[in-house]
Length: 125
Image 1: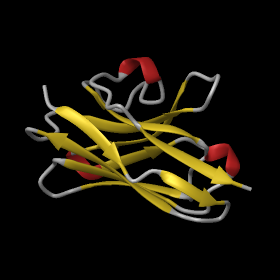
Image 2 (image 1 turned 30 degrees about the vertical axis):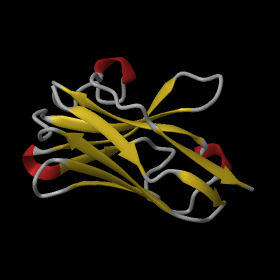
Image 3 (image 1 turned 180 degrees about the horizontal axis):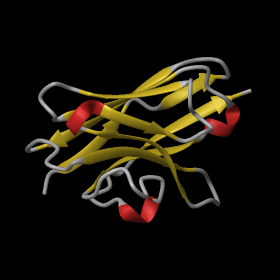
């Protein structure tokens, strides 16, 4: 399986923007669904957004809807998460991960596999 490598995190003030990238090292995303999830200190992994390649269908957690946008490169080897209007509560380590199934149950973090190492996003107030 390909290795997923996230980048683009950093420190930003509230209201700012960041664009996260997830690259498939050594191949392409041969999965029907790719997702972004995050984990804040002391908390479990939380679903953020997902994209189903067939039909380019996207799905978002209510907490980020309207602020974050998920997209994929045409070559299906890069996944992006554009994050606007960032809030301190968005502070977390962000991961990309793969999912074998469709969008049913897409918000359940345990249904994802092949996690990357993550990239840290810190939003200051």
